[in-house]
Image (tube, rainbow, N blue to C red; front, side):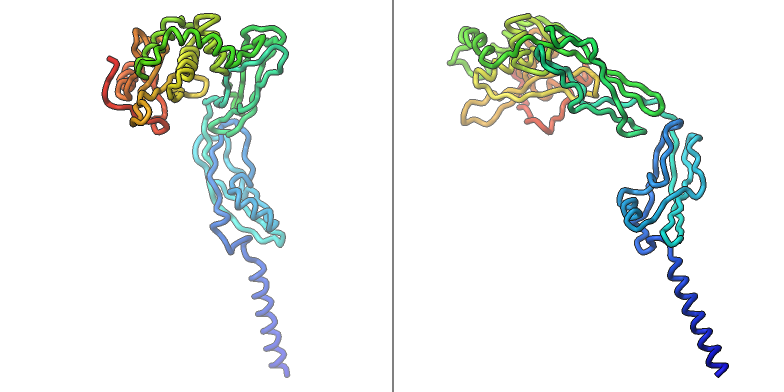
Length: 355
């Protein structure tokens, strides 16, 4: 009997040790790849990340679901520029622990955030200003950051040209600002108002028997000859921009030329495409068009159509019915002037019809 009792005791002891070993498994050890940590890049002097920030979204969700907490096994070095090892300690509700290794890269941040979606603003007298729609600020180290807009100088009760300033600052104290024009108008300009002015002028300018190319050249020449260059216009409404440039002020910037030509092309039934230069936020842009010279039943023949009076690109008739190659040649003289996403637009013929 003594031997049997000893054997029974040894058997129970083995079972107990086996049970304890099972209970002491690492948290979530059945799916190691799900808990793979991520490297982080932080700015010197910025806000320090928490241990959970080193887990992917899926891993963080799984830890929350299973009651697993994350902490640093040792305090990471966030105060020295360079790459540093980070050790995470995961612990479940039973006290089981597991370590994961990753790293943090500390950089000296001198780059200000970028304001995105900031555009000129237009409103009618008595209306509220739409200042925040579509605007955000992004930082290369901190991601989305807070931003403000100061439009205190705008008087929406009186027609006029005002300005508003957008400002963003990151955790390192880097600041970026962008000032835009705010146009307050006494009344809205409708298409009907524009057509009432435009149609008599087109009746004198355009002969219905002319080819599409001839009509385009006439429109291009008229716009360049009727509008003087001035570096400010309301870029929120092409109808108003055309009306102001052609019939009120007689001047404007590239958007004014672009809008005037576009409205004339539209009224003549000429097919066109709108192009805006690819540019960095806050930098100057440029607008021009492409026109299809093909008659009904013919294969499309798209050419670039830039009516703006600019050196080389638009002066003395240039910029009227240009090929892709001619735009590239101009870009070689003035880098980036005609940058745009060519994949979004048709290619032009290789035949040069404007020297």
